[in-house]
Length: 228
Ligand SMILES: NC(=O)c1ccc[n+]([C@@H]2O[C@H](COP(=O)([O-])OP(=O)(O)OC[C@H]3O[C@@H](n4cnc5c(N)ncnc54)[C@H](OP(=O)(O)O)[C@@H]3O)[C@@H](O)[C@H]2O)c1
Image 1: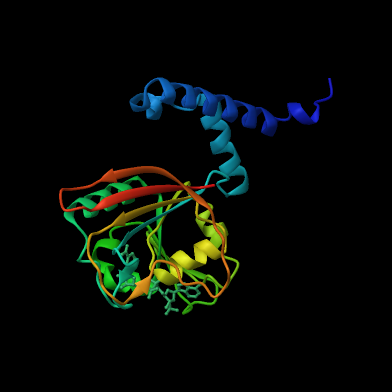
Image 2: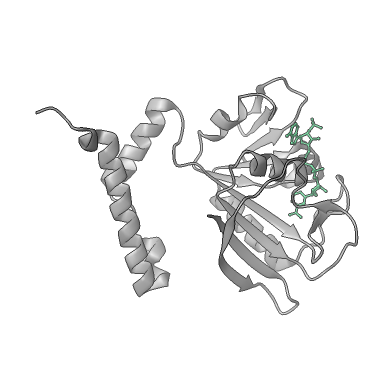
């Protein structure tokens, strides 16, 4: 019998993914703590792996920006400012998120401020010092965001942690690639400095607030936004 458009392997994967999402949502409504334990069925996992290995790309890539900002919305005083002003609780959260990520995308300025800790992780560093992309080691690739190499390079991974700084967060925003944003607001003010985003374009990206969580007694608050 001839397969119809709704009976292709791809559509079966979509149907299975939708069923899994519905099941996860039901469990979450009944008991939010259990939601993470609804694993996708093995058939869906296998189908996802197949899609990845056939194309070399991961269609499930999620880009998750993680940033700490001051009350006045700054991420640093200047391009060389190391992020040593964030709370210990935010640092713990950041490390937890990076441990769960498959790759970190970071701009060269931020990479240079944190080369020690970042050199131990799998990183793609944005830089215009290469024409397209260059692999420097097993865990380090340089990529020029002006080339067409960066998105295919990132699509090899499922969980992409976007670690900034301003230029890098802005590139993801302008390219409509931000699926999630974790923002820790630290109760301090710089009075000047680098904004989270700094676009030359009019960007109207809409997010909705998924959750808020106080991180400590001092007033550090973690906000989690999802793309609308
Ligand atoms: N508070 C936080 O959560 C947080 C998070 C991350 C970073 N930061 C801070 O942010 C500051 C750095 O921010 P930043 O905006 O100056 O730099 P950045 O995004 O870290 O790095 C900028 C550099 O990356 C490359 N790059 C990034 N986007 C590019 C693009 N679209 N096209 C071409 N090249 C691109 C260029 O490297 P080349 O010069 O090599 O061409 C550029 O000079 C640091 O102080 C860091 O500590 C704070």
